[in-house]
Length: 293
Length: 336
Image 1 (cartoon, chains in turn brown, purple):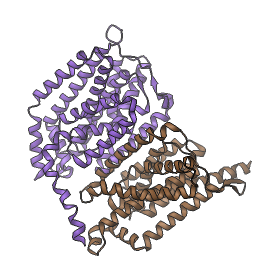
Image 2 (image 1 turned 60 degrees about the vertical axis):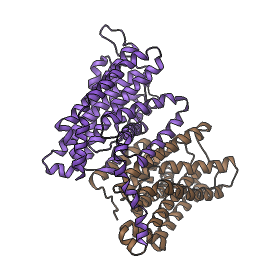
Image 3 (image 1 turned 120 degrees about the horizontal axis):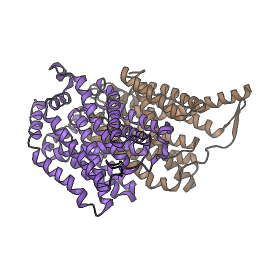
Image 4 (image 1 turned 90 degrees about the horizontal axis):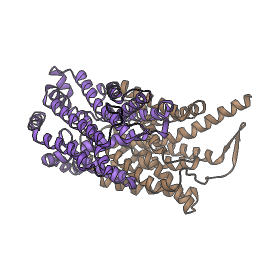
């Protein structure tokens, strides 16, 4: 009896940790891009699914080992981001109130990718499942957990830690943060603003891709996850404070646990309602977010 | 400086709508007769009329009041579900229509409340969240809405005698709705109300200092804009005969936004042209519906990047818009 409750509790905690770390990754990706170039990337969910689908193609269709596929997928994001930056994003760097233009732009990208996914992957399958990264099962107390999911959790947390270290201590990270805070002052101190913009765009998207491929390795997914992820990442970013990486990580973790707990007792839709409600309240009463920079 | 000249431009544009209005009315009422031989094309024309109504409502908010709500489809959905629910429980369609439209406009006012505190991107994001909540609500409360399956075989509204409205008569009703919608928009824009909304669009703080009740006028704009959405949604449900949460999801809101932005926001005829050009696409490309999504996405990007003022304003404002891009390379070079 209490054993069953313990299993439910432990499984909620483990799901919450994995989901939370993935939410945190995607939200950090969105918040880095918003904080630096003011681009609210509504296409983050589509990028997330794109990474997952590319991983699926590489592992299931081409037979590449999942670990190599994951690295390749994250690698693919770099030329993709620089291409997008060169063609579209760069045009608006000096436009006042560019966040709304960027928002609509990214909604356009969302719609294009939705169409492409429906035309290609949508015809093949409803549910996509990747082969596991590592096999085997570990017992945490009475709860069996797939080693694969533990591996995903470890990877997600270490990417987050690396990102923190990069932003806090490395030259590039400091440049990005300087441009976050005051673009003109950073430019006067010799920071190449434009290079830091394209770097943060690429970095943010790489993190979103990492979140997508890790999610795909841990869970099976379908194409509808894209929009849910977009809205969830926005909710996390707004509540955590736009541009605040720490806020995105903390709120992302909280959302992961909420999702896991609410899905156990009620339904995922209720969880979605709860975040959207929280986001509306924050938007109305404290638009700078809980962890404002 | 600029707001004043632009205001003059718009008041000039607001004059002399008689001829285009007459042409539009003639075309709108002639189309059902001309296409009566081919039910499919007549149907596409009818749906286009509904989109003209939606685009005009969006235009009032986005073009004239300067708010960008991405929840028009959600409001239309609220009205459509209300009407379908009421007619299913025995109401006449013609009685349910105003009730549904009113439900949409009251929801519009409530959902528009964030606009009092939020501007620009944050308001748009907020409206997108509301749109998502409304769509989730349509799916979640499946007792009322039949969830993702949707409601099919919605009966046609009946005429006075009790027999259902014929295809041609329904097409004419839709044409009349579109023409009345455009007339209402012209009247609003020409009136003091329209000028005050434009003042709010240009600078709401300044408008407030000039003694304009910004809160009240924003709410009025939301009421009327949502009424357009609601009437469109109420007419949409029996015309298509099928509604589901997908018929009113965020992509539809984006499409309505695109019609307004592509045609030219802040002009009467731009969004009408946008709706006429874009609404039939989704039906003509029905077999390749994914192509439609890709095409709409590309158009959204093209509108944002190449012609922020749309077709109607694109040629006029191009010279003004070309100034900022020249600055783009200057800053980083200067920074080095």
